[in-house]
Image (cartoon, rainbow, N blue to C red; front, top):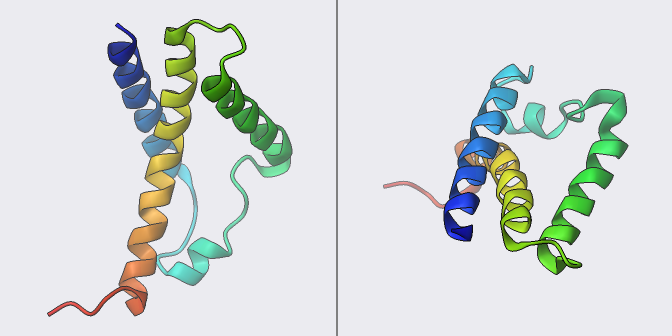
Length: 101
């Protein structure tokens, strides 16, 4: 049951992350991606603290049931994965990755 909840939360978080990624206004290069404005604008400290709290509660639990912990971690990983993969893709395209044959 917890695994199904975690997969559903991961899919929900990934969908939300992809929508948010498509709404970001950055250029096409690694340098533009690296120097882009912070996600959340002026609310970025609150988002960072909230993300850290969700991660902490998801990992340590503190009496939370398993499905709630799975939702916290699944949504958090799902939100972050598209941005991580896009940054990796742009880094790779700049020639910093291994040479392609």
